[in-house]
Amino acid sequence: MTSPADGGAATVDELAVLRPPPAPERTVVAPQPMVNEPMVVNIGPHHPSTHGVLRVLVQLDGERVLSAKPDIGYLHTGIEKTFESKMYVKGTTLAPRMSYLSPINNNLAYVLTVEKLLGVEVPERARVVRVILAELDRLASHLVFLGIYSLDLGASTMMLYTFREREAILDLMEMTGGARMFPSYIRPGGLAYDLPPGFEAAVADILDRMPGAIDQYETLLTGNPFWRERTRGVAAISAEDALAWGATGTILRATGVAYDVRKAEPYADYETYDFDVPTHTDGDAYARYLVRIGEMRQSVGIAHQALDRLPGASGGHITADRKVAPPPKHELATSMESVIHHFKLWTEGFVVPAGEAYVAVEAPRGELGFYIVADGTAKPWRVHMRSPSFVNLQALETMIRGALVADLVTAVASLDPVLGEVDR
Amino acid sequence: MSASSSDAGASPAWSGPETGSAALTPPSASADMADLVAALGDSALGHAERLGEPAVLVAATHLLDAAGFLKARGYTLLRSVTAVDYLPRQPRFHVVYHLLALPAGMLAGRAERDPADPPRAIRLKVPVPGDAPLVPTLTALYPTAEWHEREVWDLFGIEFAGHPDPRRILMPDDYEGHPLRKDHPLVYEEVAFTFNHDQIDAMKPRATS
Image 1 (cartoon, rainbow over the protein chains, first blue to last red):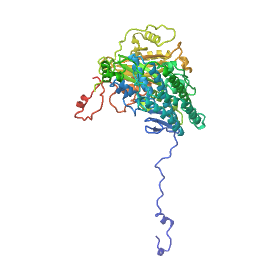
Image 2: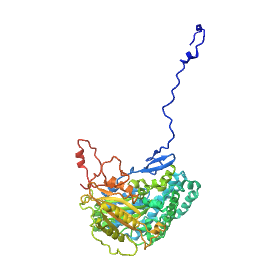
Image 3: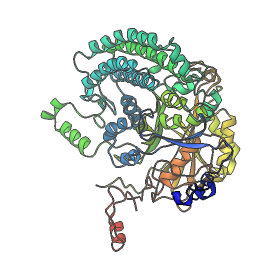
Image 4: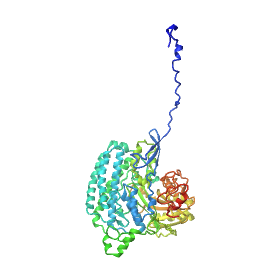
């Protein structure tokens, strides 16, 4: 402050001391030229679009995927180790729990392997029922695929429609074994018990509804420009790459290779059913969708044929071999031998002769193989599952490299992995 | 709870050929097995066809030869790689490979099974000793072997020489031990402290010791 007695105003220089010193140039972040440094993004294990606890480590260059490494094992339960301390018949309830979307096919694959080692003959009626259930299971699994796949891509209406039909199929499963998802109805030698009354009519009812329902899904999706835009040319893989990475099922058939275990190594009399194996040549996410839609139509046809055979099919629901199949309940009151058989079967279990077998079935996700080593006791020495989800997931990186990160959601959904099956 | 503790394990008595119909005109896995055994000579430790599944026991040193031979024969699909622990027996482990040859018709999109050219399936088994088990990797021939072999390393502790990414796959990275080995502790893990670690470890039930 200047005083009037000084007779003049302060000079500019004097005032300058009041002014704060000029701020130094900001050098906290030195200016750098823009570089394309890849960014690693961690997707999952908790993410709505990864279908369970799948973690993918994605390396990105902007929006482009440089690499995508799946990191699995979050759902590992050691189910193969558990098998080693269970009687063979208990394995029938254990095997389906590996894949909660296709439990019947898991159940069937395990039972077929045990039956091969046992050398037991399964009555025709049981074989026909197995085909009906396996195809219904395929339908239910593809319905979940369709609903979740479209939900991931933003078409949320679809899921309401597909779950409507899936619920009806799960009601049928409940009729057979009492449980919606894990009926464990297929047992070594045949079935747990005969079909309940009204089952055939209920199956026929759903099979009659399915073609119209599939038409409805196709109306919503197949020609939909947004759907085609999101899936065509996305996550494509060549037939050579698919084979090299061991991919089977719809992934392989969408590339033009018509490998279907039901045709290549028929089981449960599939060679006597008349059906086509839908294929496509594009190998992309849209082709996988089309192949699955085609498979659903074929499944309806196979189930219809099996349903027609059911009344004329010979034999009971399970083999008459009492060393494998438990005696009927009414015999326990009259036959000492049956009581002994019953007691031996439910305490010790049946003995499987030493040997090893690999049996594959065409599960909804591809080739599902069981490799069982038997040591001549009532428990398996080793059970290995060749699960299709595990092997197919390995092809993810080949599909998605160079694509946009948003297509990763499409790629994972089009693989339709079940993480319980991946991690086992 | 007692686990199955057969002293023999499953013992396939590897013997001479028991296939009576090896000389059929259409290609068959049995014929491929016979040719593979002839090509490998002494390295084929045995072969058998039981339950319609041809299998060849190959020395680890000649696994790549055997796989290369089969791949040239059209076995394009490696279905699975796994292992079996026959603990009291020697050699302790068998690494098991399942291979499938798809006929040309299926590769070209025709699904129907052609009796003149059916799909062929064969099994390769490689015996491996219990201490420092080592097998060559098949990832160069079959990329799909990568995860299968990681799983076998993780659960059995069998090493694959030349594997591009030899890490655990299912168990946590810091896990100790290989759970599918028959001498791995079963059931739960009691909390162990330094002073009673050995005592608790000795009480753990094992399938075989």
